[in-house]
Image (cartoon, rainbow, N blue to C red; front, side):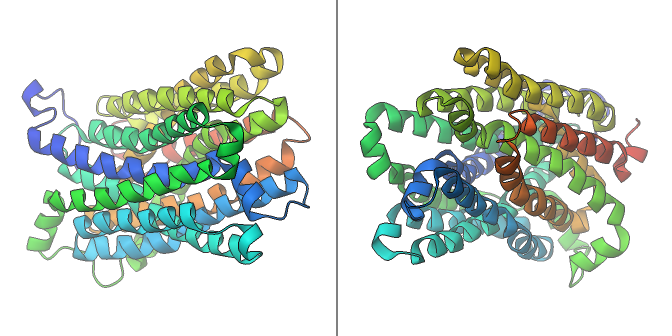
Length: 431
């Protein structure tokens, strides 16, 4: 990974080899995130199929979000195992395997029997598949950020990671488009009966294809150089992290909390919450989600690229404040103007530029020998805690106040900005 020292010539912004690497990495990442998030978009239908109909609707939805959160709980173990081998044996192998580990359970989710067919076994099987997805996604984002950053030309680390992050959020965008198309082509009864399975089957099939495409990627130059100099981490990278990089871990975990709050509360949970709070039709909420994700993708790319010029530390507070404003716009304005939810969602998406700071800050915080493990440990443990608890917390608090999601995002944004301001890298980045 390299730091910026002025604007490089245009020819070096993205050489052809980096374009190919970013394209293949982003494609697989987009498909993985698509597979992971369609579960949230289809939460109400999944609840109807995998839990007893005798239960209250709010209880079934809470249980479904609990399964959604269980995927986050599996992230640290899966992520650390893959990061361990990524730091010891190379980034490429692990980066390729993570796609397959996501594709298989996604395909099975679309094909498995429901509660009516096999009773209590249905939610238990769904739980296992969801945890497999969590293990896969635990290696995808950290591995992808390390992979593209170590391939990036000098002074373009922020742009490279921003393009990959945009690809990852693009998976959420694809999910929104697929769900919208599903509701446009099929009747509500058909979607509720069997149509909800289609996005899972399609995602699983394309995920397997992405795994084969990633075999064309090259190992990163940074890892090859470390391997040639015998500088790869010794047997247990996690021991080195816990001994020498505790501050980096804590700060990176705090910034990840802000990232989870932005994505989960402002994008993933927004459709079912708006359906419950304001009785909005699914098509309207999914169109709003599409708008939010598209604007989020643009915002993340712009802010990530900006870190090649301006220190992430200097951007932390203003980006955190903007994120807070976006959260209140999304959850306060529909109370007054519900018919323009798409507009409020777009503004909320534009407020999510803080997400672009998170990978850049973490990449700066850890040395190459334990970089993959450092990102994976910080990112996945934080996502397991906050990603796993956030859906349950929001579901429990929202009946008491429709602004509870915005208040939660405010707290997370404050923590994230503080973590980024005091990250170890900030002492050396010219801030």
